[in-house]
Amino acid sequence: MIDAYFASIPAMIMTTGILVGASGALLGSFLVLRGNSMLTDAISHSIVLGIIVVWMLTGHLTGPFQILGAAVTGLLTVVLSEALAKSGLVKMDAAIGLIFPALFAAGVILISLNARNVHIDVDTVLLGEIGFVWLHTLTLGGVRIPVAVATLSVVFAVNLAFVLAFWKELKLTTFDAGLAAALGLFPGVLHYAILTLTSVTAVAAFDAVGAILFIAFVIVPPATAYLLTRRLWLMVVLAVTISVLSCVTGYLLAVYWNVSIGGMMAATTGVWFALALLLAPGRGLVSQALRQGSERLDHDCRTLVAHLYTHQDSPDMPEENTRRALTDHLRWSEHRARATILRALDRDLIERRDGLLALRPKGQAVAEGIFARHHKSQTA
Image: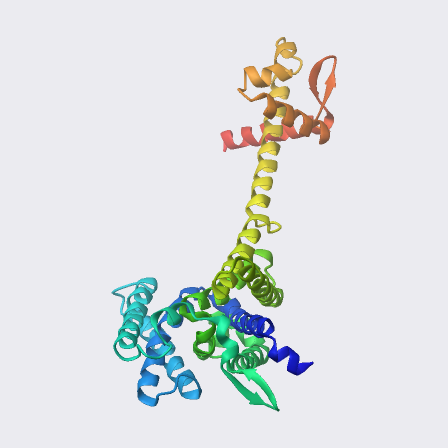
């Protein structure tokens, strides 16, 4: 059964994607909360320089030297960006925009000059090819396993162990770095530890999804989870779950439409984000629109009771305390007037009495409160 699983090409492709997504989501949750999402973009591009330099020096496209070289390049990007920002001459976002394109461009030029006959061409660097991960295998325990699956499994285990071991420290340094420093938790060390692991994960995922698509797996699932919850542990769990769902559905859709598998997996993460942006309870656009509509209707109800209070028991009450007065004198639409009256009736603020709109005791109290506050503000 194990042999059949590792011999299955679809299973290996989806497993590779899931490991990339889960490994990235574990770290990405903290990067998103710390406001360091763009550093992932910088790292995923600048490691290209490290990969090609290590290949030129050692001739190895994979292995510990590649991971070490790429990790050093990723950290170099962060250090140079922060140093440039600390100079006060440019802000952090501009510093990132200056440093990582320079390192990435240097890597692309070196690839074009020295690596045209190997598979690290520019397209591979940018997009990867997860559909071919099953071609490069190694033997473990008598079972042929794709190198990408073996490497990413180790990376996922390391990332998971790091997050679990330093959960309390990561949580505190993420939300209150000053307090963490006062307690001796070294927030700067944890900051660079996360970025180092991000660099290692990026180079491990390099063959599968490339430099550009890796960003989607690190940032989009945590950003989606952040729309759904404010609990850190639940956010991390949701981010990993969304990554897994994106990889499975992305693979199935890519096969159905015969398109790039890595591209469809990354695009699927965007679909989940769009759904959360629209439908997230309490924070989604639909929920916000409904809440704003309800608040606007409550405001109209207060306007209605104030209007009825002003004209009740007056000679013009038969003309003003009617639905027509709301459309003719307050310039409300028929729909707005009807909705406001129904809301006020439902809230027991008003009642229909002899063909007119009249205040109930609750509405009378609301109106008196409105005018009392208005009088107080005028005399203050």
